[in-house]
Image (cartoon, rainbow, N blue to C red):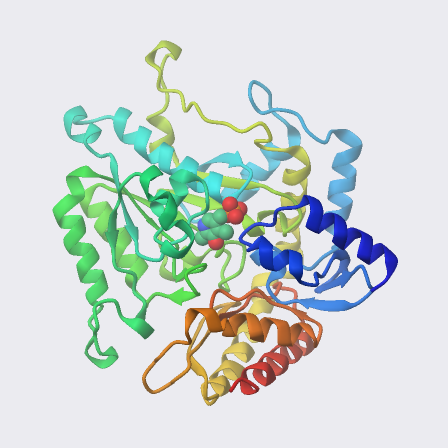
Length: 454
Ligand SMILES: *Cc1c(COP(=O)(O)O)cnc(C)c1O
């Protein structure tokens, strides 16, 4: 270990508190300190190169150091780095809003900015709640709509509102006394069916269960909140085809807002610009973040329809204003990066280029089913979860403390790949710009690492 590295590592251990990290373990371990990046590679302070296998936590899109985004941020820096949107407007925030609406599912027509996925969801939740409090129509009936239908294992962020909507006990059980209650439907986790259905006999019972809950509680339901097509943090749990579309229909039928959290799935991740497009679903509210700036800067947005927006219009004294906003709302630097990100999608035809990569990935992943400790493989575009189990036939997981996912992660790091598993689910989430060769390298290394488990 060289001197600079030793110094930085010492300071990190002395002063920092890392997210989702057991710091006792962190402080006794070696760390990788990233000092620069280019394309799909990260470089550490010792000069070692790593393939960015999880897109710097699911947000990088076109690679690091993309000249177009670099240029846009530098250009914006010459004009203004930050100015508020409370009482003022700014150029890139305006331009970006129009571009977002252009690429978003039809019907969405308004953009409310914030700075993380959690805040985007928090805003969606407050927006939906307040909408019903002041919606036109039957006031008495509308104001009773104060609850949300959510899904088991869901993850919507770490602020208290978004934790309330989530269902990940491992992360959030301790905060239970702080959370509001939701009506929770079982998640369609087919590998470990919560309703114990045999796969061949399943007629999407979890969907029927959600439908029953909607029928029972619709008068109180302000919205249904879902990660469309795939629950990310839960372990890349994919939903059966038709699940999302049916929920949308039920929301229309029962007068409930359909709120999609596209924070992880948005911006090409699933092979379409947004996951909703796969099922031609038009949400009432959509939260986006992670990939919005190409993985450059913290920015998020909550998009909604003109109908929702209109319920907030009135005289000032009517108090229909949406009293919410963050200091860095609509930050010009971040918006400039996001504009450049969308421009690259157009110029490079990113979505079209993705098709062959996704198909190759599917092909290779199929081979992984042969491996003794691979229980399930789930894929949605360039989002992949490989679930490791001790006993394949019995679907028996490893004991919690065995930390097989972590072992695989450390193994592939020796081969110059950065991964971050979710428990014993190996997550592959490379930048959309990953090359064919890099993809093969990634899969070869992961294969070997899983094969070596015994
Ligand atoms: C990451 C994530 C969030 C939270 O986003 P942050 O920017 O980390 O606050 C919310 N929802 C989903 C689906 C996510 O994957």
